[in-house]
Length: 367
Image 1 (tube, rainbow, N blue to C red):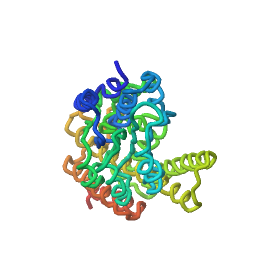
Image 2: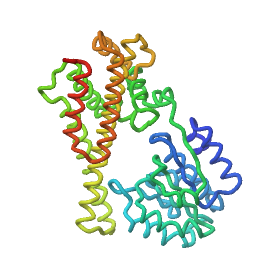
Image 3: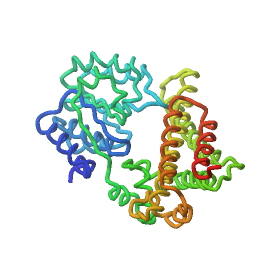
Image 4: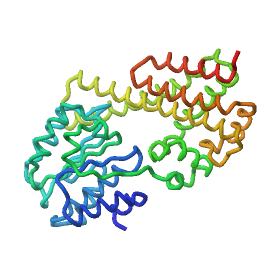
């Protein structure tokens, strides 16, 4: 099995499209879309390796170097956002200006933009000329989990490759033998097709997120909110944000050691964006887990254990669901969804969670 076939094992539609592209000759630009965690990045790396291997004096060596992350191959340029967005300067310096330059090896160069949804409008507009008049040797691949954030003028100049969510059975099997089967199944279901989220949920940090959510939902059900259980959820999000900020600080320090200069403000902005992105991402994940917990109350009350998102917590859910109105559980899901939308509008996170808890409490403990 080739690296591309292995990477697209559960993505038959994407495998067919990528395979056809290699047989017929790759296009100058692709927009690869699909849910987070669906295997887009690894598949694109394998696809890029095959593009570079064509016409290379050492195809196997080219494939091997291109598959490394980070790749040492000089004709594979991989742009990642620093913090929450791509810097316009990086797009110009690493993609737009070098694209016309001849390959260092072989016949082709590949430029990959990871998280293309993090490109602002200025960056995307700056890429239009390269997309409209591409050098014959250059291939651009944009990877996006949120395709709506990619400007239509950019998307229309790319061939589309679509990935589907990974089946939960496949995700559970890929979490490793050290994870209990019920925990692996719960992580897979809660992740909703995102392998990266499943791995997070199956690990220590994920356990902490789930525990904080369970405590919050138990407080809501019992009308015991005096100790502000939503603060544990915020604490888990803050911890993840701080860890992400430290990681970006280390990354930028390494770049500085290699001669890549950034101003103090640019560094601070990148670190703050990373902190914010990780914090809001975990907070959104926690609310998704909370919605799944409320759905599980309804499923447990209806005796439908086979559809539980948290099968490893079935006993707790049945105990809590005793006497719960299925309608109230469904209304709680709606309230959580509304809060997730509100948080995207930069409302106060603490106040939004506090309001959510008190609103849900009124559902299950009417006066």
